[in-house]
Image (cartoon, helix red, strand yellow):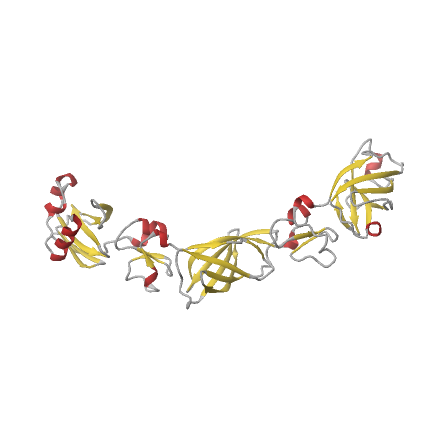
Length: 386
């Protein structure tokens, strides 16, 4: 009833200061005031000295809510007059100034814009800015005053292979975008501002399909990229994806399991999106399944002594076993110095018998009282276990 009576008073131009303000609100200090219905809410502007304040009464509000100071002039204001919803005149004894009765432009995101609950302000989705309804010229039906209608971008699978060029499905939540407009997708790297790629996007149902660019400048296995959905070169939503380039992972533990695209080929020592024919049976997709040495017997070798070494291993691919695997020792002091040794016919994929292992005089470790060397199981020239 209170809101209805005040709405009638505004409509009829019969504002009365004493009926709107009490002494508790400092009505004796109020020099001028005026009100207007804006988007079905009652907006009151009033001045104390040279300062103009804004308060609002909605239909469900028990009392006015304050939206703070709008402007402060150089002189005491005697009169306030609405020219229209978006322009107000304030007059003093000597001057007249005009101003807009809102501060929509200071709010940079949908949440802060709509949580303000200013009758003048709402979020213009396709312009990506807080505006009045009249300022929202692109699809004003997507102008919203409700935080529950703020557009959010959701990427259900945020692990993408950068070399694939596949489509990225981006869900538009809480709002239905027009299907007859042209959207584009912008991929940018927070770590490298020069890395910007724009691809075409298409909207259907509740998803925007973005063509994933092929990125050649990535120099590590993983890169985080921001994905923005653009309309008319204006970002209307953003999310983040994890971009992988499989061929840059150099170890099985880093490659396997990083995403659904990458797998380790132990027979080639490579990480790839799609396993080669030779690797399809033995590809590793989980780091716990990477080939590894678990024990070596004997743990020590003497110089000039030829030893048969037993190497216990996990997850060594059983591929034409005796024909392709060898044992290799390598110097830690000279990385280019290695020796290859045959394996016994009795070797299996979990126990490898290395025949005739010897550290010769060319090894820098030969003359040391005690030193360490590395032993590996190799397929061709590819190290399988270490």
